[in-house]
Length: 110
Image 1 (tube, helix red, strand yellow):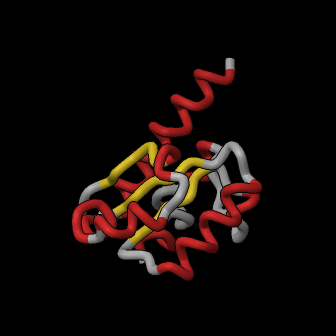
Image 2 (cartoon, one colour; image 1 turned 90 degrees about the horizontal axis):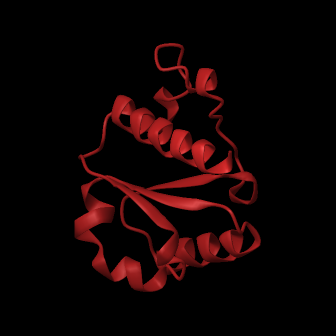
């Protein structure tokens, strides 16, 4: 529910030029919730290898603390740039983290 709320008029990430995409290959940030299994990790690893620019945001207590073994199957650990705590984090917290992440990214692009 948290991710769907991000495209609502109340939050309006489009005003910050942040849009949802259905493809990891087209994404700038991949937001991961919950524990991931080998199949999911393999998909993420394969897709992110072809997307050299994408980074990972881990959102929620489970993915941050409860699933330490998951870090070992996620090959691209160095691309984790944000850990957003909460169970689950609110849409406003996710939006704030994305805005902060993208504003920093845009500053570096100048």
